[in-house]
Length: 120
Image (cartoon, rainbow, N blue to C red; front, side, top):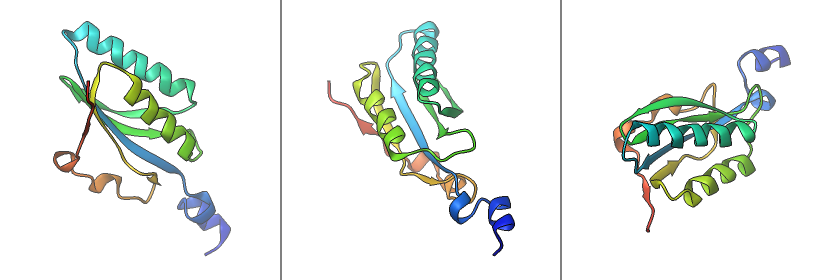
């Protein structure tokens, strides 16, 4: 396949990697939920990443991407570290890096995702 087509279809050297993330948390009210989510987004943006997704109640799920680039394993590990260190997060899940354009992200069934429970 020609380079122009590989670029158009985000294949081989043009693959852009992302990863899925989800977390459950303790929050007494909507203000605490919003404060935690704002803190999460501030952290994600400080890593030069973006978050796409949403949530209801005390659970948020989505994906992490880098603008026109691939997310690195180091960036993924920094997100895991943030989730582990935040006392308000009660459980989390992080997928391996996957192809953001041609990968299995849409095949992930939210009902089958297993969360890692944090011990207090």
